[in-house]
Length: 144
Ligand code: CA2
Image 1 (cartoon, rainbow, N blue to C red):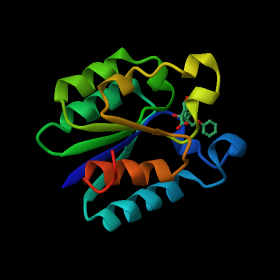
Image 2: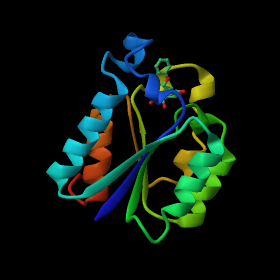
Image 3: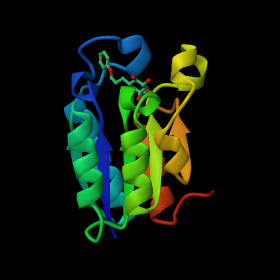
């Protein structure tokens, strides 16, 4: 099984600001965590991060026929991007949404997730652990 892990804008800034919200670990640590979680689950995972909505749409489109599932943290685009929602619907790969923070306990504008409407599952507020659960869920190892 091959999974694509997509991270949206500013996640490359992890560990630099807002440790109370996103933790102290940096983006390299998140990537290492994801690689280890994938290896543990017995799946291959490629990680892509972009700050650009169109690049994220292109990345989702290019996943068709290459990957078996998508783990996506669209970051701020979660709450704004119909284009990412449509791309996820277009490829129709099983997709799991992840958020480090609990968006439902934050500002009202973070309570809407467009991307989530095309996802089979959402993990939020679990920090890095949400990525592990998402990978395990797509691998069929996590309870629904
Ligand atoms: O909780 C999450 O994972 C989010 O997707 C993170 C996004 C935020 O816009 C979503 O509402 C929830 C933010 C990405 C990281 O932003 C940083 C901001 C400052 C310092 C480091 C990262």
